[in-house]
Amino acid sequence: MFFILKKIVGGLLMPLPLLLLLMAVALYLLTFTQRQKMGKVIFLLAWLFLALLSLQPVADRLLRPLESTYATYSGQRPIDYVVVLGGGYTYNAAWAPSSNLINNSLPRVTEGIRIYLLNPGSKLIFTGAAAQSNPVSSAETAGKVAESLGVPATDIIILDQPKDTSQEAQQVAMRIGHHPFALVTSANHLPRAMVFFQREGLSPLPAPANQMAIDSPLNPWERLVPQSLYLSHSERAWYESLGRLWQALTGKQQSEPPS
Image (cartoon, rainbow, N blue to C red; front, side, top):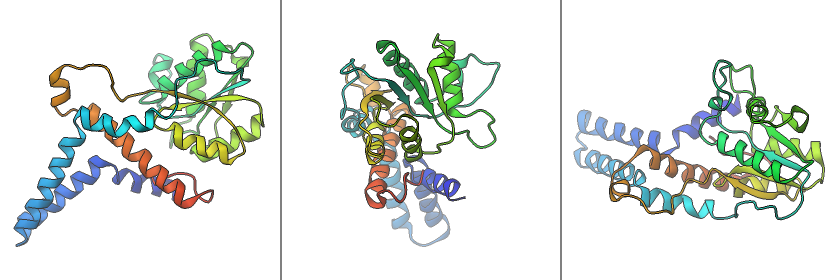
C-alpha cells in the first residue's frame, strides 16, 4: 500500500501535474473569490515555469550535471556480470520484443548487451518486478529482448522480485556477492543507484546509458520552441534531485523517493 501511495504522491510532485494543479488553484481564485491579484500571480508563475522547463537550454542545463557524473563504459577492467536495472515497460506478445521496452529501458538493455559482448564469459542480469496487473516482469521482458538480439538464455539471469533500486541492490548482492560487475542504468539515475549498491558493500563499475541532455548543435527553432521532449528532460532532473534528497534524509530505512 505504501509503495502505491508513494508513486501517486510522487507523480503529483512532478513539474507538469504540480504546475497544472497550481494553474487550477489560480483559476479557482480568479473565478470564485476576490483574490484576483493572487490568482493572476500564481497562474503567471506556473505558466512561466512550464514554458521555461519545456525549453532545451533550460531542461538540458538542469539534466547535464547528473548525466556527466560518469563516463561511458569502455572496458576499463574485466567483469563477471553486467547488471541492467529495470525501467519502463509493457508486454504484448504480438509486438516485436524491443517494442515492449519503453522510455529509458531499451537504451539500458542495448548498452548492457554491448558491455556483455565486450566481456566474453560474463552474464547479463536483468532486474525489476512486474507492474500491477502485468503477468510478465520488467526483468523478464528485458531478458526476452536480449534473447531476440542473440544473447543465449544460459547467459541471462532474471531477478524479478525487486520493486525499486534499493531492493535491486539487495538482490544483486545476494546473487553475485563480490564478483566484479558493471552497473547499467540511465545516466541521470546512475549517481543515486551507485549509492544504493555501495550501501550493500558492492563496488560496481558505473556504466551510464540513455544520455538525454543534448550537447550537439541544434537548429535555432529547436532551442527556442517549447517541446514536451524537453519537459521530460526537466522532469528527470527534478525526479532524480528529489530522489537524492530523499535518499540523504532516509538513509537505509527507505529506498526510493515518493514517485
